[in-house]
Image (cartoon, rainbow, N blue to C red; front, side, top):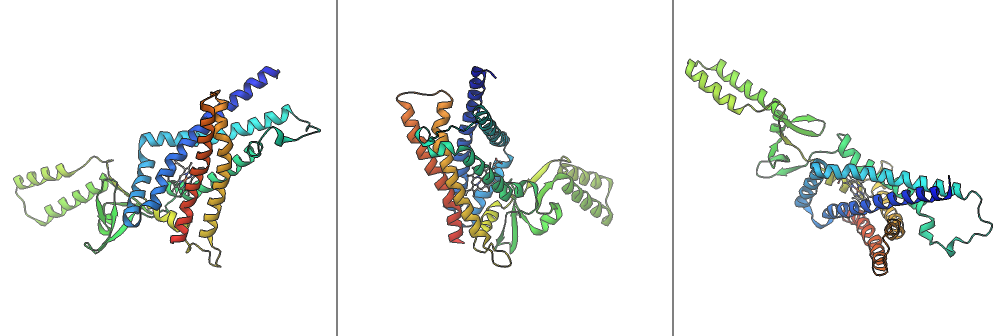
Length: 320
Ligand code: HEM
């Protein structure tokens, strides 16, 4: 590769890393605001608000598009970073006889690839802890609460209906912990009720016709989803970081989880410390007045965002 082609391809890689990196910073802000609800709102209300938020994040079409962009950005940022590292190593195969890296690059800049890899390990572990469980397993229970008035456990649906346990059995399709109320199941119970009534009573033609009309008005479109239960992700997160989360022989998984999250947030902080301002440079956005401001903002961002993420498991653990 000619020198100029090398520089061009290296610049392009840096450009895309900067774009995906800044997009992921936006994701971090949104994700942090959502997660902070876990410690600012407590009790039943906190649980409901967080589970409603998690439902919205996984079902709203616009948010779903953003989610796919996030997954793509994480993968692209990682692959592009590795490619850049290999390209730079190949271009400089022999180590300099005299090397004093601290003279021209800071600690974080030299360790960006290592820090990035550790952040990726954190994201993979983190997604398997919550996201995977929520999306692809039936391990996450439904959001439920005990109602003193009904003397029963009630389940909430995304349409705000409260479903009792017996209703859940009748119209809810309980695949593990999923609650999906499809119209076909409700239609069947309306049809059965109608048939039972007709066979138990002697009816005139007119009465039968009238009853049939009432029944047909109640029948809904076969595949219509009448209600879907909220998954109780709040309880899953609370239990994950709790003191009670221990193995049979006493290994404190809750504590280890919280420590892992705090250490990972330190790593993320170092990664952002260099990455934030450097992204603006890679995009060619240099300005005598604004570049120092961006640097200051980037440093504030790299401390405040990971710090706020880190206090969540710590508070959950302490309060458990
Ligand atoms: C204490 C800190 C954190 C907690 C309690 C937490 C909690 C959660 C939960 C409950 C989910 C699944 C539900 C949802 O999509 O909203 C999730 C998804 C996710 N988390 Fe976190 N998170 C934390 C920090 C982080 C950090 C620091 C990162 C990135 C460096 C991150 C990256 C992700 C990603 C990429 C997803 C999938 C998002 C999607 O599907 O749109 N999380 N997190």
